[in-house]
Amino acid sequence: MLLGKHVAYTPSYGPAARGGRVCCYVVVSTEEIDSPIPEKTDILVVMNNPSMDFETTLKSSGLLIMNTSLIDRKPSRNDIRILRVPATAIADDLKEEEPEFKDTKIVSNSVIFGVLMALNEESFNEKEVKKILKEFYTGTKARFISLNMLAIRRGFEQARHLLDSPV
Image (cartoon, rainbow, N blue to C red; front, side, top):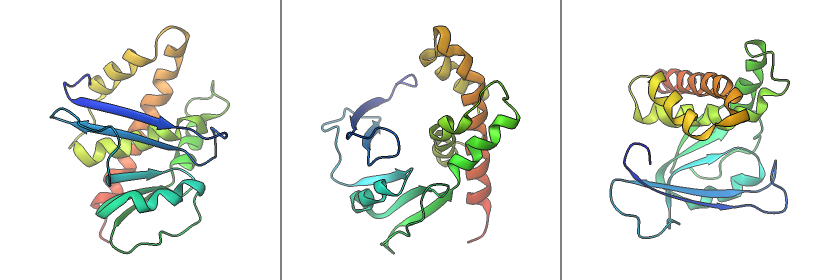
């Protein structure tokens, strides 16, 4: 939105918010969005085993990004591309650099945000990322900006490494 694109966000949470089967659609377009829920998705981010059930929503040749720290299920399809990222482990390792935070695993979603950025950007634009975070992390939540910045950067770097590696 801050970059002038149209965005639709449709979350759907079951009774278990953390660790449960959760689905959230984010549609980003340069044109107006007709429906906030796509028939098939281009990219599917799966953070845990229960959410692997959404694999069917991914279009053929779509990209499945798996948080391999929490997923031991194998994809059931062979018509998709797969990017395996240990997002929770990457986030957990951040406690070494951000000791004020006892549980850095909470930023595993920011690691994935960095991965998504790497799919679209040539380089990590720290100024733009910080501007976006400052928009959403205000007041007492502003203390989380540095941790999220670090998580996003690590996700970006991990994806660049994976994307540059031969298959």
